Amino acid sequence: TIGSSLLKVTLVEFLDPEGETCALFHPLVKDILKKHEGRIRYVVRYAPFHPNSKFIIKILEAARKQGKYWETLDLLFEKLPEWGSHHNPRPELVWDYLPTLGLDIEKLTVDMKDESIVKMIEQDIEDGRVFGVRKTPTFFINGKPLQSFGIKQLENAIDSALR
Image 1: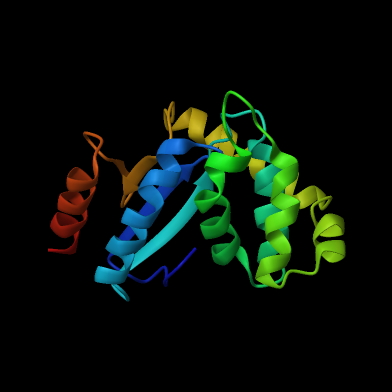
Image 2: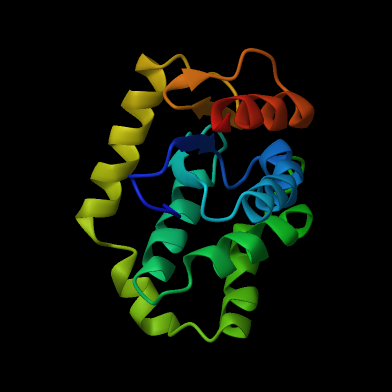
């Protein structure tokens, strides 16, 4: 989560860290957040639809414990074509990328086994099912689903909610 719960607008994104569309949208969402810095609360939830997604989520959540969540998410999306190809997935490659962020890899591998991460993933999957998340990214603004998918639609919905 980025931003206070007291902000007028909350943007929730259900994403899959192995999803190509999520990787494409990620810099665009970051631009929106930068444009509206201090005015939007941003919440990431997971919808692990791809085979290696849960493994990657565990890495992300373990990186959070080292204060490196956002940097890790950025890097993994940037390198997704290498490690997450749907024709030839090679998730073991992420271990080559992670040290560049200054992560303590030994601590990361221990923290990945934290049972609370598994419970969080299960809760996000269940919430996604309840809210009708069938693809990623799926966006909600102040609890309401984005009516039609696209970056312009997302920008317009946020601008409308801010007014």
